[in-house]
Length: 327
Ligand code: ATP
Ligand code: LTN
Image (cartoon, rainbow, N blue to C red; front, side):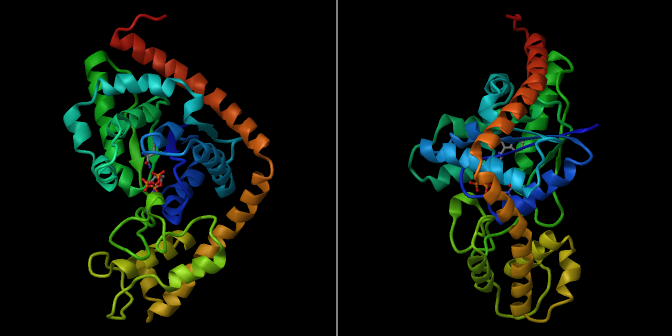
């Protein structure tokens, strides 16, 4: 069976972009793939954070992933810092990627600018090396992610190919999987930028959000003044975003869905309803899981043991090929 790996940061509240851009695909792929999913807590250290909040976010995110439909019996679900091979392989990755390549990463440029003149950690800069380690440690064939992660999967492929050509066949070269609808969910208030955990506000819909608030956010979503419902990302970013969300939530096609609407009001109302119906079972299941954090911790431990068994073998292969003595 082909292997799937993906990760998500415990850096804030899970939102609709994460759900439609990545998690829906994660759930789908666990049926016919050998699936491994990871809460990447080490990645969350690259920006300033509060330790207590990180602990809470990590366990909550794991519970949310289970609530969304990741089945820890079928997929391996674990926390990155529980498997020490990740930062170990990351060093080999750092020595296989160049300063120039890392400097070209748009996520780094965005996040280092967002923080303005404040502290920019070295970890934020070398972050793609850790991500490459995450992926390559599991002989991964496919990486389901949102469109914003395309460049990080590309650099992972470049690193794998370079390592293989320098030191002999070591890593599987992975491919990204980006869903057609929902790949890039935009902020409802600023449809020119992606919905993001770190930019919460009236334009971000959280998976755990109260339904009244969800309705209100869609009602107030920014559209435009020409009143025509048409899927055209360039000319009509706000309306196209609503159509993409509706398509992502119902499994439809955004271009075809546009034909059902003549006005913005009904499109907003239907999109809100579809999103609420998508969120309802997730919120119910999350409430149950939240009542028993010890059980989630147990499941994560089982996941980490399974992950480590695979990662240890791949790391040993990489260490041998690169010329390190086995200890
Ligand atoms: P931040 O904005 O703080 O970087 P994030 O919201 O992008 O955080 P991540 O943990 O970095 O969240 O992303 C988890 C997954 O969700 C990734 O696969 C990413 O591609 C996807 N994703 C994030 N935002 C969106 C979005 N607006 N539309 C579609 N997919 C998204
Ligand atoms: N960089 C990703 C999170 C991430 C990831 C990974 C995704 C870390 N390691 C491995 C896929 C595979 C992000 O910010 N969304």
